[in-house]
Length: 112
Image (cartoon, rainbow, N blue to C red; front, side, top):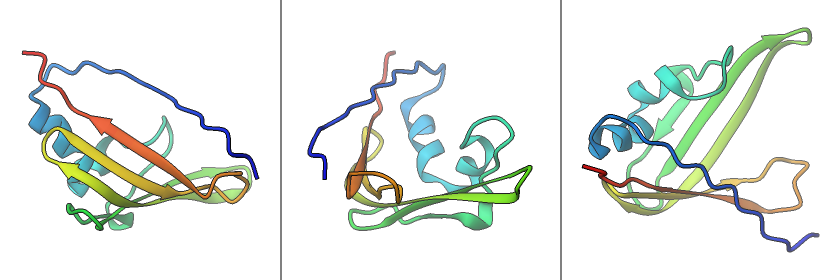
């Protein structure tokens, strides 16, 4: 098993209050509208968010390709939550991953 640490850092600026952007991650009715790449859906009925430490953060992405209907679940447990500034969750790693968990660490800053 590999013990190497890998970090992917993405920075995005939105012309919206951080409370609204934070809500887009924490409110299932918002997540369903934007989560996933082009041609991939995140159906509302496949999203569960329990906005508390220890709560579930789950999204199932769905698409159709030459092999038929495909699903890719993201199942995480919220480990830190400080609305509207911080969301940290540990996700179960993909079956082919060397890592037991992947951490999603999101910080929301108000840029004025």
